[in-house]
Length: 307
Image 1 (cartoon, one colour):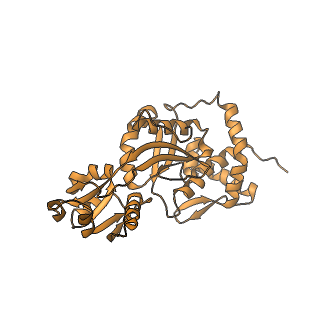
Image 2: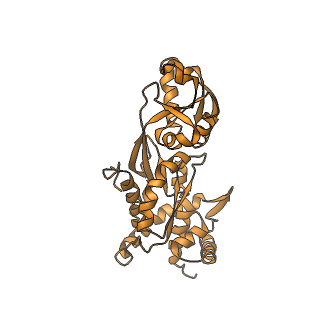
Image 3: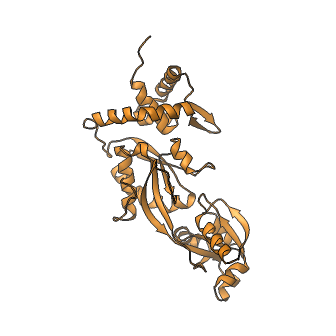
């Protein structure tokens, strides 16, 4: 029996990391046809399709995920053994990172990180996807994305996290809203219909409803939107009220023609962090990106686990 080419493990790791033949090729600096050829040989070697189409994307098969977990110690040892000869240099590295974030967090985060990333790593690309219905945890576990920007109150043990910032909330009403002529309190807040911007985590709306339930009260939620960004413009055309993260509301206030009011009941702030699977913990390029993202928010940014 002909011996297997051990270099195929590197190709296999790239395919599992990217869940994309073209992106895996970019990661290794080879052409898409060459990566497709490597995938064909890997499929023959393992007797499994490894990547299979689900909708408009490729996902690893259960067999591929099991193989990748088993090969991780070997791959990490190999990387450590050659790290002195292949030191990460952001100025010369060509790599695309895939992230996951809601539209609101893309607005809150990307304007602050891109300058630092592009100035030091001109060949570093960022590709951001919205969370899918199964959740960002699944996307990280399946290697569909490498980083998630968001909130998890109790992440699993195989995720690492770095704190980015805390977010307060605010209430949005249109200019000239009748509530502006009244005392702004909980009674006024509950008198009008509400727009929920669920995004992915739905954090502040869930906090509002939980606080109201504890008082035996509830809101009339008339509209549910999946986009934080669209919500201020819908509010501007109605007498409804929306409760949104302060950063997105303040940035869109002038463009949408809205007024901001404080939440009429105390709500805990949203803690936003950067999450990644432990498979990337010792990846120098990955660590560099995580550090630049954290430093872009606050020099004192702390990690719940080491970056």
